[in-house]
Amino acid sequence: MLDQKLIDSAPIPTHVAIIMDGNGRWAQQKHRPRLYGHKVGVESVQEIVEYASELGVKVLTLYAFSSENWKRPSTEVSGLMSLLKGYLLSELSKMLKNSVRLVSIGDIQKLPQDVREVLEKTIAETAGNDGLILNLALSYGGRSEIVQAVRKIASDVLAKRISLDEIDEKLITNHLYTSGLPEPDLLIRTGGEARLSNFLLWQASYAEIYFTDTMWPEFRREAFFRAIAEFQGRERRFGRTSAQLGSG
Ligand code: IPE
Ligand code: IPE
Ligand code: MG
Image (tube, rainbow, N blue to C red; front, side):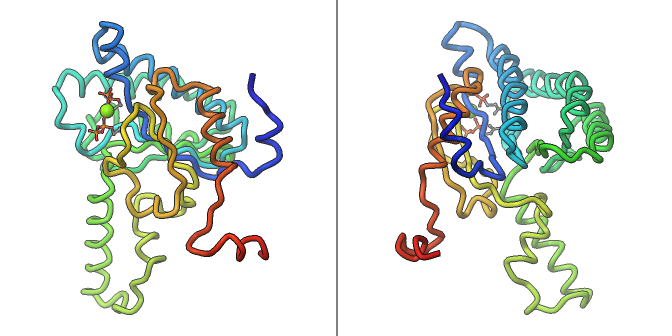
């Protein structure tokens, strides 16, 4: 069983970001279509959102669809889009009840119009909630996020709204989709691969990274707890030495 004491005695990560990978392979292992894996993956999303909220995680970012995932067969893309829409429609009442606030990062103009409308409506209806911030990365790519930030900053320089020496890390951070959110403390990737796949490239500079072979459809409360427990046992040095951290 879970050892709740460990969690209570050490800090819970403020921001957890998850690359939810392995749906397709999980389904194929069971001789089922890939979309079945995505469908069961939605149940994992429901369970992890609920648990993160209970644990007091402040921000949960879920990589649901990358800018590269548009290259998948159109049937898989449309299946994912309809699961996303269904998820948003079915979860709204729970979000309101649990005070979950939905936000999103990514190029959401690329989403089908009906999905975008439901997304924007859910974001608007949960905007006043002060519990967990559920941040969905949709049509998200870390490089294109940086490109759009650079364009905006360059146009501000050209228009003389800012000067060159005002460009610093904080300014760039504030021009990313994640502006206003804290950096991820813990970045989890399920599904056995050990790569970032264009996720939060700037923001994850000092995230603790946790890779697990567990496929996303099987990543439930216990698996999430293990990831948090491992996070709590790590020493985050941010370039300093252990001795410096010990002396505060
Ligand atoms: C993650 O599972 C979900 C999305 C990328 C949308 P995958 O669909 O990538 O599953 P695998 O990696 O093929 O098993
Ligand atoms: C990353 O998974 C994107 C999401 C989980 C949404 P992919 O399955 O698309 O990543 P690669 O292609 O294996 O790098
Ligand atoms: Mg994958």
